[in-house]
Length: 376
Image (cartoon, rainbow, N blue to C red; front, side):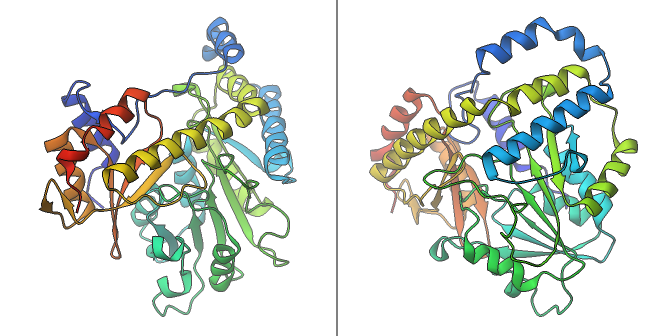
């Protein structure tokens, strides 16, 4: 894969417009840290220069275990939790430890693109299960294997899904079980894990979710969408013993040890149950208002039961002119209307992703485009 990271290109276009564009791609409404955490970080910046000790690592693992129990009713041993310097570093390490050239990997499309790219660089055979809004975005992993009778080495899912907002339904679980074999490792990117609305968050690590069979599983938890700690934020991997032992051993060589500030600040975030409740109230309101505004100007948004985005099917026309792909639609919206969105083209459909992290005036400006957009 030689194409540049799509979000980098979008950010460059936004920067070139010097704030003139209406940003529904990244979103300009920045969440702020809870005051107590922000104050503590600012008064302990010297800890950034101090490498973490076993004490800080153990305290972080205990906070991660408590979060998994509180949010998902998951029971994980602290020894099977590994702090990582960000989500993509975690994925890179998992791929390096789990895949050999020629192994088959299942991913979803749409889905967070980093995992498929990393697996391709490992020379794995990547199969895409297409998510169709008309089928509630449930993946058909068996069809994605395209007749390959060998069970995949890795099934990589992303629940709650980015960008569709789909949650881990019984149908999605059945699709995973339909192709998983004894050597399969199931990887779940749960970056948006707690942000589920109207139902309880579900983890693949929860006992009985995948039935009575014993699968190797690894789950990524990342908090950049919940707590804006910037470069000091940590993510963590949690999973079954065999996989986590391999990943933990690899990580001793893969990156420098985290600082005391990183571990302590992120642990404070993991322990902040009130913050999770506040965000589960904040985002549904943002999403609902955005969906209504999009409907009013002619888009057709899908439901958003989780996450922070609204997904729309590409309209047949923009500004009275036919569009044939999500990329073409996003380019026209940016070039002619100063409206930034994220395009997602799949073999089935094209989608446009709108961020709910907008300011109120952004929603007013979006609504003001109705007459000019002329969506067919």
